[in-house]
Amino acid sequence: MENTLLFNYAEQNKDLMVELEELLTSNPALAPENGGKGELAKARCLIEWLCQNGIEKSWIQEFDAPDSRVPEGKRPNVVVTIPGESDEYSIWVMAHLDVVPVGDLKLWNSDPWKVHRDGDKLIGRGVEDNQQGLCSGVLAALSYVKNNVKPKHTVKLLFMADEEVGSTYGMIWLLHNTTLFKKQDLFLIPDGGDPKGETIEVAEKNILWLKVHVQGKQCHGSRPDQGKNACLAACALSLSLHQMESVFSRKDSLFEPDYSTFQPTMRFSNVEGVNIIPGEDTFCMDCRILPCYSINEVLQEVEKRKNQIEQEYGVSVEYTALQNSESPATSVNAPVVLKLADAIKKVHGIEPRTIGIGGGTVGAELRRLGFDCVVWSTMDETAHMPNEYCYLKNIVADAKTLIQLFSE
Image (cartoon, rainbow, N blue to C red; front, side, top):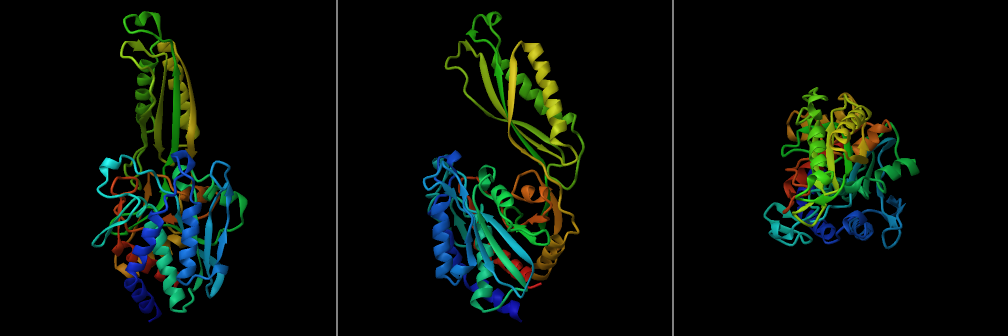
Protein backbone atom coordinates (compact mmCIF):
# COMPACT_ATOMS: atom_id res chain seq x y z
CA MET A 1 0.00 0.00 0.00
CA GLU A 2 2.79 2.43 0.92
CA ASN A 3 4.61 1.76 -2.35
CA THR A 4 1.47 2.57 -4.34
CA LEU A 5 1.37 5.96 -2.64
CA LEU A 6 5.04 6.52 -3.42
CA PHE A 7 4.67 5.36 -7.02
CA ASN A 8 1.80 7.81 -7.47
CA TYR A 9 4.00 10.65 -6.23
CA ALA A 10 6.66 9.75 -8.82
CA GLU A 11 4.06 9.59 -11.61
CA GLN A 12 2.51 12.92 -10.62
CA ASN A 13 5.74 14.91 -10.42
CA LYS A 14 7.20 14.68 -13.90
CA ASP A 15 7.09 18.46 -14.26
CA LEU A 16 9.19 18.79 -11.13
CA MET A 17 11.86 16.70 -12.85
CA VAL A 18 11.64 18.89 -15.95
CA GLU A 19 12.30 21.86 -13.68
CA LEU A 20 15.31 20.13 -12.13
CA GLU A 21 16.69 19.07 -15.52
CA GLU A 22 16.33 22.65 -16.77
CA LEU A 23 18.20 24.00 -13.75
CA LEU A 24 21.03 21.49 -14.01
CA THR A 25 21.48 21.88 -17.77
CA SER A 26 21.66 25.67 -17.50
CA ASN A 27 24.71 25.32 -15.24
CA PRO A 28 27.44 23.81 -17.47
CA ALA A 29 29.75 21.70 -15.31
CA LEU A 30 32.84 21.19 -17.42
CA ALA A 31 36.17 20.03 -16.04
CA PRO A 32 39.24 22.24 -16.42
CA GLU A 33 40.57 19.74 -18.96
CA ASN A 34 37.57 20.68 -21.11
CA GLY A 35 37.96 24.42 -20.60
CA GLY A 36 35.45 24.65 -17.74
CA LYS A 37 35.29 25.89 -14.16
CA GLY A 38 34.20 22.63 -12.54
CA GLU A 39 30.91 21.69 -10.91
CA LEU A 40 30.60 24.10 -7.97
CA ALA A 41 27.94 26.42 -9.43
CA LYS A 42 25.85 23.44 -10.46
CA ALA A 43 26.22 21.81 -7.04
CA ARG A 44 25.13 24.98 -5.26
CA CYS A 45 22.04 25.33 -7.44
CA LEU A 46 21.18 21.69 -6.83
CA ILE A 47 21.54 22.02 -3.05
CA GLU A 48 19.34 25.13 -3.03
CA TRP A 49 16.71 23.36 -5.14
CA LEU A 50 16.72 20.29 -2.87
CA CYS A 51 16.22 22.43 0.23
CA GLN A 52 13.35 24.29 -1.44
CA ASN A 53 11.68 20.99 -2.27
CA GLY A 54 11.67 19.19 1.05
CA ILE A 55 15.22 17.97 1.73
CA GLU A 56 16.43 19.09 5.15
CA LYS A 57 19.66 21.09 5.16
CA SER A 58 21.00 18.86 7.96
CA TRP A 59 20.78 15.86 5.62
CA ILE A 60 23.26 17.43 3.18
CA GLN A 61 27.03 17.07 3.51
CA GLU A 62 29.69 18.51 1.22
CA PHE A 63 33.06 16.86 0.64
CA ASP A 64 35.17 19.21 -1.44
CA ALA A 65 38.30 17.98 -3.20
CA PRO A 66 41.00 20.66 -3.52
CA ASP A 67 41.77 21.69 -7.11
CA SER A 68 43.76 24.86 -7.71
CA ARG A 69 42.79 24.92 -11.39
CA VAL A 70 39.20 26.06 -10.74
CA PRO A 71 38.18 29.55 -9.54
CA GLU A 72 37.30 28.65 -5.94
CA GLY A 73 39.93 25.95 -5.63
CA LYS A 74 37.61 23.02 -4.97
CA ARG A 75 35.51 20.37 -6.68
CA PRO A 76 32.21 19.47 -4.97
CA ASN A 77 31.01 16.05 -3.86
CA VAL A 78 27.59 16.21 -2.21
CA VAL A 79 25.93 13.51 -0.10
CA VAL A 80 22.22 13.62 0.80
CA THR A 81 21.17 11.19 3.54
CA ILE A 82 17.55 10.11 3.87
CA PRO A 83 17.31 8.40 7.30
CA GLY A 84 15.87 4.89 7.18
CA GLU A 85 14.30 2.53 9.68
CA SER A 86 17.61 0.66 9.82
CA ASP A 87 21.17 1.91 9.45
CA GLU A 88 22.66 -1.59 9.24
CA TYR A 89 23.60 -0.72 5.69
CA SER A 90 22.90 2.16 3.31
CA ILE A 91 21.66 2.12 -0.25
CA TRP A 92 23.68 4.49 -2.42
CA VAL A 93 22.57 6.07 -5.70
CA MET A 94 25.67 7.62 -7.24
CA ALA A 95 25.38 10.20 -10.04
CA HIS A 96 27.96 12.62 -11.38
CA LEU A 97 27.57 16.36 -11.83
CA ASP A 98 30.04 16.99 -14.63
CA VAL A 99 29.24 16.78 -18.33
CA VAL A 100 31.24 16.66 -21.55
CA PRO A 101 31.58 19.56 -24.02
CA VAL A 102 28.85 20.01 -26.63
CA GLY A 103 31.15 19.37 -29.60
CA ASP A 104 30.15 20.81 -32.96
CA LEU A 105 27.26 23.22 -32.33
CA LYS A 106 26.11 22.85 -35.93
CA LEU A 107 25.06 19.28 -35.13
CA TRP A 108 22.63 20.44 -32.44
CA ASN A 109 19.04 21.28 -33.32
CA SER A 110 18.61 23.44 -30.20
CA ASP A 111 20.72 25.26 -27.60
CA PRO A 112 22.55 22.44 -25.75
CA TRP A 113 22.55 24.43 -22.49
CA LYS A 114 18.78 24.93 -22.48
CA VAL A 115 16.46 21.94 -22.17
CA HIS A 116 14.25 21.57 -25.22
CA ARG A 117 11.12 19.56 -24.46
CA ASP A 118 9.51 17.53 -27.20
CA GLY A 119 6.60 15.71 -25.59
CA ASP A 120 8.12 13.14 -23.26
CA LYS A 121 11.64 13.79 -24.55
CA LEU A 122 14.10 16.24 -23.00
CA ILE A 123 17.05 17.35 -25.16
CA GLY A 124 20.23 19.05 -23.93
CA ARG A 125 23.78 18.41 -22.83
CA GLY A 126 23.78 16.29 -19.69
CA VAL A 127 20.06 15.48 -19.58
CA GLU A 128 20.87 11.77 -19.79
CA ASP A 129 24.51 11.67 -18.73
CA ASN A 130 24.14 11.82 -15.80
CA GLN A 131 21.18 14.01 -14.90
CA GLN A 132 18.60 11.34 -15.69
CA GLY A 133 20.05 9.09 -12.98
CA LEU A 134 20.43 12.03 -10.63
CA CYS A 135 16.78 13.00 -11.12
CA SER A 136 15.55 9.44 -10.66
CA GLY A 137 17.36 9.22 -7.33
CA VAL A 138 16.00 12.59 -6.23
CA LEU A 139 12.44 11.71 -7.29
CA ALA A 140 12.55 8.40 -5.40
CA ALA A 141 13.90 10.12 -2.28
CA LEU A 142 11.30 12.89 -2.46
CA SER A 143 8.51 10.32 -2.76
CA TYR A 144 9.45 9.10 0.72
CA VAL A 145 10.09 12.54 2.20
CA LYS A 146 6.90 14.16 0.89
CA ASN A 147 4.76 11.26 2.09
CA ASN A 148 6.45 11.05 5.51
CA VAL A 149 7.51 7.45 4.89
CA LYS A 150 10.88 6.14 6.02
CA PRO A 151 12.79 3.84 3.67
CA LYS A 152 13.60 0.46 5.21
CA HIS A 153 17.32 1.23 5.10
CA THR A 154 19.10 4.58 5.03
CA VAL A 155 19.33 6.04 1.53
CA LYS A 156 22.30 8.11 0.39
CA LEU A 157 22.37 10.13 -2.81
CA LEU A 158 25.85 11.03 -4.02
CA PHE A 159 26.40 13.81 -6.54
CA MET A 160 30.08 13.66 -7.46
CA ALA A 161 32.61 15.62 -9.46
CA ASP A 162 35.04 14.75 -12.22
CA GLU A 163 33.64 11.48 -13.59
CA GLU A 164 34.08 12.41 -17.24
CA VAL A 165 37.85 12.90 -17.07
CA GLY A 166 38.98 10.28 -14.59
CA SER A 167 37.31 10.82 -11.17
CA THR A 168 40.49 12.11 -9.50
CA TYR A 169 38.47 14.80 -7.70
CA GLY A 170 35.35 12.69 -7.36
CA MET A 171 35.09 9.00 -6.55
CA ILE A 172 38.83 8.39 -6.23
CA TRP A 173 39.20 11.32 -3.83
CA LEU A 174 36.21 10.17 -1.76
CA LEU A 175 37.50 6.60 -1.52
CA HIS A 176 40.90 7.72 -0.26
CA ASN A 177 39.96 10.74 1.85
CA THR A 178 36.71 9.80 3.58
CA THR A 179 35.14 6.88 5.41
CA LEU A 180 31.73 7.29 3.80
CA PHE A 181 31.38 3.79 2.39
CA LYS A 182 30.85 0.47 4.18
CA LYS A 183 31.46 -2.91 2.59
CA GLN A 184 27.91 -4.02 3.45
CA ASP A 185 26.35 -1.02 1.69
CA LEU A 186 24.55 -1.42 -1.64
CA PHE A 187 25.95 0.74 -4.45
CA LEU A 188 23.93 1.61 -7.56
CA ILE A 189 25.36 3.80 -10.33
CA PRO A 190 22.66 4.98 -12.80
CA ASP A 191 25.20 5.79 -15.53
CA GLY A 192 24.50 3.20 -18.19
CA GLY A 193 21.77 0.85 -19.30
CA ASP A 194 19.41 -0.09 -22.09
CA PRO A 195 15.98 1.05 -23.37
CA LYS A 196 14.13 -1.65 -21.40
CA GLY A 197 16.08 -1.36 -18.15
CA GLU A 198 16.77 -5.08 -18.17
CA THR A 199 20.58 -5.17 -18.06
CA ILE A 200 22.52 -4.95 -14.79
CA GLU A 201 26.19 -4.19 -15.40
CA VAL A 202 28.48 -6.11 -13.04
CA ALA A 203 31.83 -5.92 -14.83
CA GLU A 204 33.90 -3.58 -16.99
CA LYS A 205 36.70 -4.23 -19.38
CA ASN A 206 40.12 -3.06 -18.26
CA ILE A 207 40.90 0.31 -19.83
CA LEU A 208 44.29 1.38 -21.14
CA TRP A 209 44.71 4.70 -22.95
CA LEU A 210 48.11 5.29 -24.50
CA LYS A 211 49.69 8.46 -25.88
CA VAL A 212 52.51 7.41 -28.22
CA HIS A 213 55.22 9.77 -29.45
CA VAL A 214 57.46 8.76 -32.36
CA GLN A 215 60.72 10.66 -32.90
CA GLY A 216 62.35 10.43 -36.34
CA LYS A 217 64.16 12.94 -38.54
CA GLN A 218 62.48 15.64 -40.62
CA CYS A 219 63.49 16.11 -44.24
CA HIS A 220 62.25 17.30 -47.64
CA GLY A 221 59.46 15.29 -49.19
CA SER A 222 61.60 14.54 -52.24
CA ARG A 223 64.46 13.07 -50.16
CA PRO A 224 63.02 10.52 -47.75
CA ASP A 225 66.42 8.84 -47.82
CA GLN A 226 67.78 11.73 -45.77
CA GLY A 227 65.27 11.45 -42.95
CA LYS A 228 63.31 9.06 -40.76
CA ASN A 229 59.60 9.33 -41.45
CA ALA A 230 57.92 9.47 -38.02
CA CYS A 231 54.44 9.44 -39.58
CA LEU A 232 55.17 6.22 -41.44
CA ALA A 233 56.55 4.59 -38.29
CA ALA A 234 53.58 5.82 -36.24
CA CYS A 235 51.13 4.37 -38.76
CA ALA A 236 52.94 1.04 -38.69
CA LEU A 237 52.99 1.01 -34.90
CA SER A 238 49.31 1.93 -34.57
CA LEU A 239 48.42 -0.90 -36.95
CA SER A 240 50.66 -3.30 -35.04
CA LEU A 241 49.05 -2.34 -31.73
CA HIS A 242 45.59 -2.78 -33.26
CA GLN A 243 46.59 -6.28 -34.32
CA MET A 244 47.14 -7.25 -30.69
CA GLU A 245 43.53 -8.46 -30.89
CA SER A 246 44.98 -11.66 -32.35
CA VAL A 247 47.24 -12.10 -29.30
CA PHE A 248 44.63 -11.32 -26.64
CA SER A 249 41.99 -13.32 -28.46
CA ARG A 250 39.79 -14.86 -25.78
CA LYS A 251 36.07 -14.10 -25.85
CA ASP A 252 33.55 -13.47 -23.08
CA SER A 253 29.83 -13.41 -23.87
CA LEU A 254 29.21 -11.13 -20.88
CA PHE A 255 30.51 -8.24 -23.01
CA GLU A 256 29.62 -6.55 -26.30
CA PRO A 257 31.80 -6.84 -28.28
CA ASP A 258 32.88 -10.09 -26.68
CA TYR A 259 36.60 -9.55 -27.33
CA SER A 260 39.40 -7.13 -26.37
CA THR A 261 39.75 -4.07 -28.62
CA PHE A 262 42.84 -2.00 -29.46
CA GLN A 263 41.87 1.08 -31.45
CA PRO A 264 43.98 4.00 -32.74
CA THR A 265 42.04 7.19 -32.01
CA MET A 266 43.25 10.78 -31.63
CA ARG A 267 46.15 11.99 -33.79
CA PHE A 268 48.15 15.15 -33.22
CA SER A 269 49.28 17.50 -35.99
CA ASN A 270 52.88 17.07 -37.12
CA VAL A 271 54.05 19.27 -40.02
CA GLU A 272 52.42 22.16 -41.89
CA GLY A 273 53.43 21.31 -45.43
CA VAL A 274 52.63 18.45 -47.77
CA ASN A 275 56.24 18.37 -48.93
CA ILE A 276 57.72 17.91 -45.44
CA ILE A 277 58.44 14.45 -44.09
CA PRO A 278 57.67 14.69 -40.36
CA GLY A 279 60.34 14.05 -37.77
CA GLU A 280 57.75 13.69 -35.00
CA ASP A 281 54.33 12.10 -34.83
CA THR A 282 51.96 11.49 -31.91
CA PHE A 283 48.85 9.35 -31.71
CA CYS A 284 46.65 7.73 -29.07
CA MET A 285 45.28 4.22 -28.51
CA ASP A 286 42.06 3.28 -26.73
CA CYS A 287 42.40 -0.30 -25.46
CA ARG A 288 39.45 -2.13 -23.84
CA ILE A 289 40.71 -5.41 -22.45
CA LEU A 290 38.76 -8.39 -21.14
CA PRO A 291 39.29 -8.90 -17.40
CA CYS A 292 40.97 -12.26 -18.02
CA TYR A 293 44.03 -10.30 -19.16
CA SER A 294 46.01 -7.91 -16.98
CA ILE A 295 47.11 -4.52 -18.23
CA ASN A 296 50.67 -5.51 -17.38
CA GLU A 297 50.43 -8.37 -19.90
CA VAL A 298 49.26 -5.91 -22.54
CA LEU A 299 52.04 -3.43 -21.77
CA GLN A 300 54.62 -6.17 -22.19
CA GLU A 301 53.27 -6.82 -25.70
CA VAL A 302 53.20 -3.07 -26.43
CA GLU A 303 56.88 -2.85 -25.45
CA LYS A 304 57.75 -5.75 -27.75
CA ARG A 305 56.01 -4.15 -30.74
CA LYS A 306 57.48 -0.74 -29.96
CA ASN A 307 60.99 -2.22 -30.10
CA GLN A 308 60.25 -3.88 -33.44
CA ILE A 309 59.12 -0.58 -34.99
CA GLU A 310 62.16 1.27 -33.62
CA GLN A 311 64.49 -1.25 -35.25
CA GLU A 312 62.62 -1.37 -38.56
CA TYR A 313 62.19 2.39 -39.07
CA GLY A 314 65.19 3.79 -37.20
CA VAL A 315 63.03 5.94 -34.89
CA SER A 316 62.63 6.21 -31.14
CA VAL A 317 59.26 5.70 -29.45
CA GLU A 318 58.00 6.83 -26.05
CA TYR A 319 54.53 6.26 -24.64
CA THR A 320 52.58 7.21 -21.53
CA ALA A 321 49.39 5.75 -20.08
CA LEU A 322 46.69 8.42 -19.95
CA GLN A 323 44.42 5.94 -18.20
CA ASN A 324 45.20 2.60 -16.62
CA SER A 325 42.20 1.01 -14.93
CA GLU A 326 41.37 -2.57 -14.07
CA SER A 327 39.02 -4.06 -11.52
CA PRO A 328 37.33 -7.35 -10.57
CA ALA A 329 33.70 -8.05 -11.38
CA THR A 330 30.81 -7.85 -8.95
CA SER A 331 29.47 -11.35 -8.26
CA VAL A 332 26.13 -12.06 -9.91
CA ASN A 333 25.04 -13.31 -6.48
CA ALA A 334 26.03 -10.15 -4.60
CA PRO A 335 23.17 -8.67 -2.51
CA VAL A 336 23.02 -5.49 -4.61
CA VAL A 337 22.55 -7.56 -7.79
CA LEU A 338 19.86 -9.81 -6.31
CA LYS A 339 17.93 -7.00 -4.62
CA LEU A 340 17.96 -4.78 -7.71
CA ALA A 341 16.91 -7.67 -9.93
CA ASP A 342 14.02 -8.42 -7.57
CA ALA A 343 12.92 -4.76 -7.61
CA ILE A 344 13.01 -4.65 -11.42
CA LYS A 345 10.89 -7.81 -11.65
CA LYS A 346 8.34 -6.58 -9.11
CA VAL A 347 7.91 -3.12 -10.64
CA HIS A 348 8.24 -3.85 -14.35
CA GLY A 349 7.58 -7.57 -14.68
CA ILE A 350 10.74 -8.18 -16.72
CA GLU A 351 13.55 -10.65 -16.11
CA PRO A 352 16.82 -8.70 -15.79
CA ARG A 353 20.17 -10.10 -16.92
CA THR A 354 23.75 -9.33 -15.93
CA ILE A 355 26.26 -7.96 -18.44
CA GLY A 356 29.73 -6.46 -18.72
CA ILE A 357 30.60 -3.27 -20.61
CA GLY A 358 33.57 -1.82 -22.44
CA GLY A 359 33.00 1.70 -21.12
CA GLY A 360 34.35 2.96 -17.85
CA THR A 361 32.37 4.10 -14.80
CA VAL A 362 33.22 4.83 -11.18
CA GLY A 363 32.19 1.23 -10.56
CA ALA A 364 35.75 0.18 -11.40
CA GLU A 365 37.12 2.32 -8.56
CA LEU A 366 34.66 0.84 -6.08
CA ARG A 367 35.22 -2.77 -7.15
CA ARG A 368 38.98 -2.36 -7.00
CA LEU A 369 38.65 -1.67 -3.26
CA GLY A 370 36.20 -4.49 -2.60
CA PHE A 371 32.85 -2.66 -2.82
CA ASP A 372 30.20 -4.56 -4.77
CA CYS A 373 28.30 -2.25 -7.10
CA VAL A 374 26.09 -2.30 -10.19
CA VAL A 375 25.46 0.09 -13.06
CA TRP A 376 21.85 0.25 -14.18
CA SER A 377 19.31 2.57 -15.75
CA THR A 378 16.62 2.69 -18.42
CA MET A 379 18.06 4.73 -21.26
CA ASP A 380 18.85 4.93 -24.96
CA GLU A 381 22.49 5.82 -24.16
CA THR A 382 22.82 9.08 -26.09
CA ALA A 383 25.63 10.29 -23.82
CA HIS A 384 28.27 12.52 -25.46
CA MET A 385 26.23 12.75 -28.68
CA PRO A 386 24.80 15.91 -30.26
CA ASN A 387 21.12 16.29 -29.34
CA GLU A 388 21.59 14.13 -26.24
CA TYR A 389 18.19 13.25 -24.82
CA CYS A 390 16.33 11.37 -22.13
CA TYR A 391 12.70 10.41 -21.60
CA LEU A 392 10.62 11.53 -18.65
CA LYS A 393 9.00 8.11 -18.59
CA ASN A 394 12.44 6.59 -17.92
CA ILE A 395 13.10 8.98 -15.04
CA VAL A 396 9.81 7.89 -13.49
CA ALA A 397 10.31 4.19 -14.23
CA ASP A 398 13.75 4.21 -12.63
CA ALA A 399 12.48 6.21 -9.65
CA LYS A 400 9.78 3.57 -9.07
CA THR A 401 12.41 0.82 -9.21
CA LEU A 402 14.47 2.72 -6.62
CA ILE A 403 11.38 3.20 -4.45
CA GLN A 404 10.91 -0.57 -4.47
CA LEU A 405 14.59 -1.15 -3.73
CA PHE A 406 14.48 1.28 -0.80
CA SER A 407 11.50 -0.54 0.68
CA GLU A 408 13.09 -3.99 0.85
